[in-house]
Image (cartoon, rainbow, N blue to C red; front, side, top):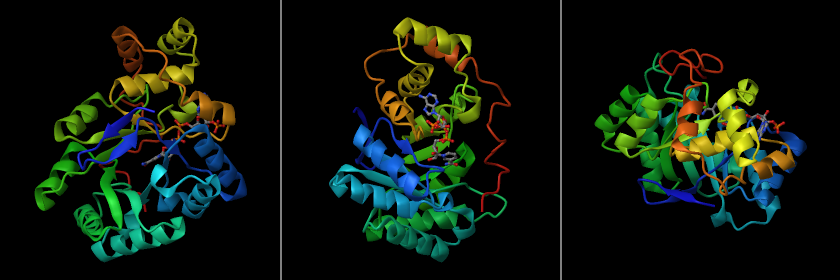
Length: 276
Ligand SMILES: NC(=O)c1ccc[n+]([C@@H]2O[C@H](COP(=O)([O-])OP(=O)(O)OC[C@H]3O[C@@H](n4cnc5c(N)ncnc54)[C@H](OP(=O)(O)O)[C@@H]3O)[C@@H](O)[C@H]2O)c1
């Protein structure tokens, strides 16, 4: 698979696997299936309650540890610096790994106002070797500039909501200008995936691929790393099989034009959303 080189010189694959809400034995089976299908980056979080399952899936897959990147996230209730460090240590224990490959702040929770402390904890955890790559999720330009100004350290990743109904052109530019890789959560748009929308359906027909593959290709051509979730083996495979065709710029633009100001899936505006 193609890859991105991050601003800390580590590499991540072009596509990752979203693990929410995969849990229990069924969840482990789905995640092992994803690893067998070829995914090498698993996205989890403390708040998904499935770090144990993600670690177990990694071991059951039999893949060498260094071949798979595991990302997890610090929840809002652990933003104070000591709590954030505890959260990361506990995550490593639940995952059963010595080092977390990617540690992110899940949401900035600006009303609590402690995300700079959570960032300082990640910087320290990286220096200690507990976390390899550090980044954030759901950060706006203002949040990003604040943590960079206060610590001198730029995140490697910003994981945000991106899908055709909410293309986030401006945030993609903010991240790119700062040298940050944008990851897309809910890259299909989940329940609201515009599979039937004209530009998606027309491109699927033109390239003889599925609408889901068109949407993932749209992400890749915009420089975004999508994190599709699927518990269905055939979709897991389809979602990786997107390197054999290319959308025209016109097709990319037509899909971006599906965006709407109210296109967020659940109104998760980082300036106001509180995630505990
Ligand atoms: N940082 C954050 O705040 C945040 C927030 C939300 C999500 N996330 C991360 O992002 C990941 C993905 O987001 P998501 O699960 O919300 O949404 P998503 O990946 O956009 O959509 C997942 C849904 O789409 C279906 N699907 C997957 N591939 C498909 C295809 N090719 N054709 C048709 N349907 C397809 C899946 O069904 P089946 O499973 O039945 O195949 C599932 O119901 C999560 O798992 C999580 O890791 C992060």
